[in-house]
Image (cartoon, rainbow, N blue to C red; front, side, top):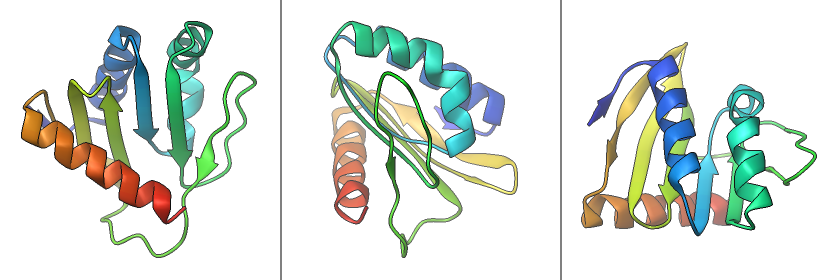
Length: 123
């Protein structure tokens, strides 16, 4: 599914995090975290494995959010999410616009997981 709306991406992320039963891996713009905080708090309370990253420092009282390293070859700010290894988001936010995709296709989820791991390694 193509993603083109910042609001739509936040709604999708909220939905996918809320559905997660085992793990949430997320790279998102720093300003998204306060909006996602309620659903992330529930995930943390349910002891889900969470790995969270942003391009700038974010302070959440219930989870740590790592800061992305320099030199990422990505258009704009990455939006990468992998939820339980069953669905994923690969997108970017640039100048207030979002462009990307969501899918539950196994190859897409594997590519998103690999992308998340590479971003995390460089952070």
